Image (cartoon, rainbow over all chains, first blue to last red; front, side, top):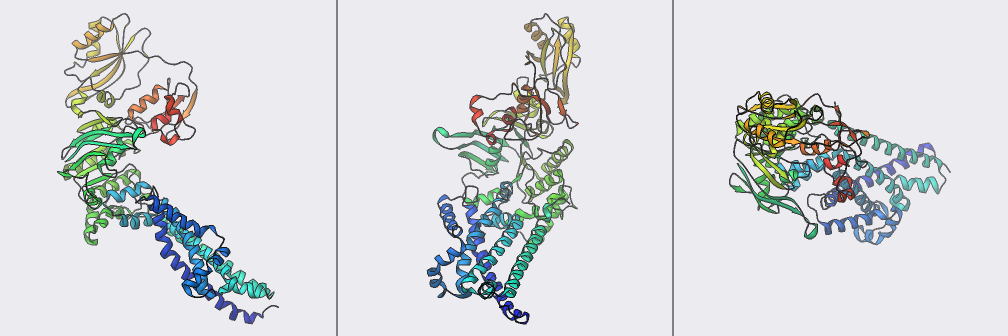
Length: 224
Length: 415
């Protein structure tokens, strides 16, 4: 039973808003926790600024936990933790917990990779210039890796939209919820089509914007 | 002034221990340039990292203007590093910062105000001759310009010691000269002590006051450049005066390598030698120049057959010359292959520009009948692009088991 086109905005727009809200909150948490985690992951490694094997192994192990389960399984597995943290296992609040866990682990690895690409020679420049560890992280590791960090953010953002759709399937709201409940269970091809188009469009837009930002921040690196 | 005393750096423990630096002593007075040379893998890089304390020496002391830097804690070390400006090979500029922002980095770390930073950066850009390049990104600058910015950055905090680690390697001869001239002029203006780590003997001859030869982590020879060059027994002098490719000697002639510089030498010595020996003396290769008003140089000559080595030596001695007979056996039938500049591991044979003269000599020894394919149009640095034999290039057995990245440049080429 297809919805009338006139009903579509009333259904889709709030769902789009919910998706944006969910992804927005999750991304804030992901950057806030994942960025420092990635930086520490790299810098406790032998090539880092403050190598520390036990810490590195422990953090790496924890990060791998968040990366090893398929998101659907992770979501189900952490339900007790979710209930403990936000008091419910339904809706946007509940979706944010597993999404953040998976997102943080993913982003930390992407950040670690980006920071690792900064040349050791540039780090030496920081040391001989009298920089402190924090100054070197800020000006050299993050400063020089900025294009890579933006690319990481783009990839992570798109992954979170995908996760939000999966979370939607278990009642978290958003475009995923709409597509499953209307498009799939009620055979509403119109809603399905609109949801699919919106998801594709948002991913394309994010990737395009991200690529432009990467190019803009690395323009200094190209010969003119 | 900077003073290194008994600086030792070892890695690993027990039977796996490796001593990269072994009791290195080095003193550089203010206003003086000390060069440290040595073959690839001798410990030059380790020494440079011990001087600016990027690596902490296992034992020994590094003293700058009476302050000992070696046993400081992290915070004090940060402060101490501010008195040592480092110029890196390839400049190591931050690619996402403009030239001015790169120079400002140490000032930023120190917390200097924006206005003071801007004026100091302007001053430094002026000093290194690039007043209009502050807004340029490193990728927009030439190698020589990047190195100038690197020097400006090293000077930002008014250090008392300038450490140049292969600062001119990979630059063309003209650019190298201009960078050296810049270092000279800064030295005079700021009364710095300069430590120049290099493999380029021409750099040493043209700028250094003293030179130390590092081999297997030890300083095997050191002294004032002018003294060494006039010492016929000096190994460093032989390296400083690069051997030229000699013309083939006439048949049956004995080939002698002559060093000038022991003292007063008549400039028409080849003729006089011929008269003294009663035979023909042919000049096969020579480079002679005036250093401190004394003719200094190196020559390869061919002496007519039938004379004992003792007699030749006596005749040379009378003329104030020092010589050794060269007997050279060339392996037969070389196979040819092209050796490129730069390393191409894992399949081995390659030639690198930053090969020091000793390595370069070692490499060319394996390359009989070598013909330079490219020479960069200059005799300034031994840039070796050669047609090489793949036979005869041998390494000691234990080295053959090593991974390619463990090889120094010269070893890699010889494989």
